[in-house]
Structures are given as C-alpha cells and as structure tokens.
Image (cartoon, protein in one colour):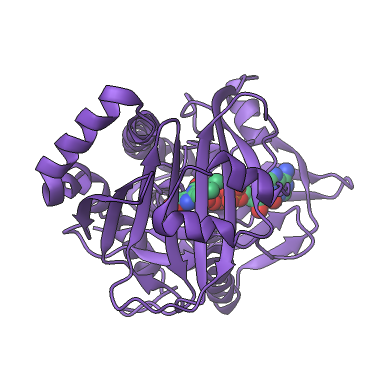
Length: 383
Ligand SMILES: Cc1cc2nc3c(=O)[nH]c(=O)nc-3n(C[C@H](O)[C@H](O)[C@H](O)COP(=O)(O)OP(=O)(O)OC[C@H]3O[C@@H](n4cnc5c(N)ncnc54)[C@H](O)[C@@H]3O)c2cc1C
C-alpha cells in the first residue's frame, strides 16, 4: 500500500521509535513522535552495533559507509578474572564489523536524520492511553490532549504500557543479576580496538573504548539478590563496585579502580510479547522483546524491526495486513536472539570445574567461536 500522507503516531523517542519514524517518513508517511522526556538527551553509556544493525542505519542514511562517531571493532578478547589471562580471541564477525557508539552520539545521529526528513517531535508528551476505533486510533496524553492517527507504533521500551494493553498484565521475573555501568576517561589509542569480556565465578565485566578512544565503557554484571531496583539512572557506590569485583586482576582491575560515578540497576526478564499488534497499534523494539544485554542485540533488533515494519506497508494492501506481516516476520527472529542472550548469562558466570572445562573448550574452539553467532550478524533486514 502507498503510505504517502498516512499519519503515524510513534510512542517513544528511543532508538526503536526514531528509526521507525525515519523508515516510515522516508516512504512518505506523516510521522509524529511522542516522547515523555522534556529533552532528547541520553545517559552516557556504550552500545555495540553489529552489522545487522549497521545495515539498517546505512539504509536509513543515518550513517555513511565509514560511519562517523562510531569506533570500528576488531573483535572480542575473552579473559579469566584473576590475572586477566587471555583465554581466547573472537575475531570480528564475517558479516561485517561491529561499531562502538556512545548512546548519546547514536541518538544524536538519529535525531538529526529525523529532523532533516521532517519527522515531528512532541517532547514532554507522555502518552496515557491509546484508543482504537474502526477507522483510526487516538493517542491521549497525560494532559488530556488527543491526536487522531491512522496507525500507532509503541516503541515505549521494556516497561511498555501499550504492551500490557495488548497482552494483559504480566509479571517481570528478577534474574538475580545486577548490572553496573560507568564510562571512564581514557587516553590510550589502540590501533585495533576490541571488546574485552572478563569472566569470573558469578560475575563478568565487559569493556570497550568509545569516542575516538577518549572514554572506556564498563559494564559489570554480578549474580546478586539484594538489589531489585530496575531504574537505570540510579547511582551506585564506586567503592562497593570495587569491593564486589576486588578479585578481578589485570587490566580490568585497573579500569575498575578509576570508576567514579557508576550506575546500578537490577536485570528483570519479560518474555517476547505473545501479541505484537491489534490491526492498528503495534509494538516495536524493547516493548515487543526486552532482551538481556548479554548479546548486545537489543538496539540492533529495534533497528531491524523498524525497517521490516516500514517495508511491510509496501508489500501489503492495508494497515492491519501490514502489521500482521510485520509481526509474523519478526516474532521468531526476536525470540531466537533473546534466547541466545539468556543462555550467555549462564555461560559467562560458570564456577569451579565447569568454568575450567568451558575455558579449555573456548581455547580449543578459539576463532571458530564467532561462527556460532553468524546467523545473528549476517541477517539483513533491508535485503
Ligand atoms: C547496559 C545495557 C547495555 C546494552 N548494550 C547494548 C548493545 O551493546 N547493543 C545493542 O544493540 N543493545 C544494547 N542494549 C539494549 C538497548 O539499549 C535497548 O534494546 C534499546 O535501547 C531499546 O530501544 P527502544 O527504543 O525499544 O526502547 P528505549 O530505548 O527504552 O526507549 C523508549 C522510549 O520511550 C519513552 N516512553 C516510555 N513510555 C512513554 C510514554 N508513555 N509516553 C511517551 N514516551 C514514553 C521513554 O522515555 C524512552 O525514550 C543494552 C542495554 C543495556 C541496559
């Protein structure tokens, strides 16, 4: 169908919402993004965007062939926690290199492209309700303002209210894992930057450089049950972080010593939504498939969703057919990636003999390990 002139309301101005807005706008739709935050700002943290996400950013003209602001990755080094001994090296995926982005920089590029294309933004606009009518949908804001649209895309994140409208109330499951993150000023330039994944019993730490090597991004995960706050803007105590990872030696031990203002949040699990759409309203990104950060794929999946959603309108004759085709196309892929991320959580934290056996296997398998996930990285939503 031709979406020229159709009006879309997008709930959420995150990576999923803005990429969907761009993909629809570039096909002629009129698009309004409703974002509850008063400003389009982002907390400082890193994101790895693998080739399956990069291919969408290029197709949306957000980045060029040599992506600005991103730092090209040359693979991942796996290390043991005690002295930082190298266990194995995983080369960059055959599908194409991953890029390290500061989250604010990637969102900045998306915003710039969206403004250039004429996407309209309403900031400080919290959506309270979406009403579905036979020939339109109505978006109702907290202050009572109503906007009629032809179609609603809910990209309102992992704790989506619209998901609950479509699927009924659901309870999130605490994973007994708590995440810390920090960015540390850095000045060491590595010609071939790589992520370092340091694994210890019940814990792991991922580090990689950002912004032309001026920052080091740190995410530290520990198994723990006494912290269950999901909000990811809460400050943690840097001394507590160091104490909890005090037996991590080598380079990662040195990096953790410099963490000044870490954030801490508990990881909760919600399944991939059963129902993604109702013929006029559809879920996208974390709202449809919240994923644990152990495959670095949440934002990449949201980018894939955005492209497939917009293309479904080209291929189908009406809105409900397009949303149904989008759901069918994306459900299985999202489920498979989310399951792979969940499995990694267990593999990274092995203890005792299991840990030693897994390390021996990793050493033996070595560079071939990356092939295991080639199906994730080689997926081309734009093909
Ligand atoms: C520590 C960590 C590391 C990660 N690393 C990676 C990585 O390396 N690579 C990767 O691909 N992914 C990574 N992810 C996952 C990735 O960040 C998310 O999957 C991605 O940001 C999801 O985007 P989204 O647009 O769906 O949701 P969000 O980014 O959560 O955006 C939702 C937006 O909706 C707005 N909103 C919510 N409710 C309303 C409402 N009622 N009205 C109006 N606005 C509303 C919110 O304010 C927000 O701006 C990581 C996640 C974490 C936590």
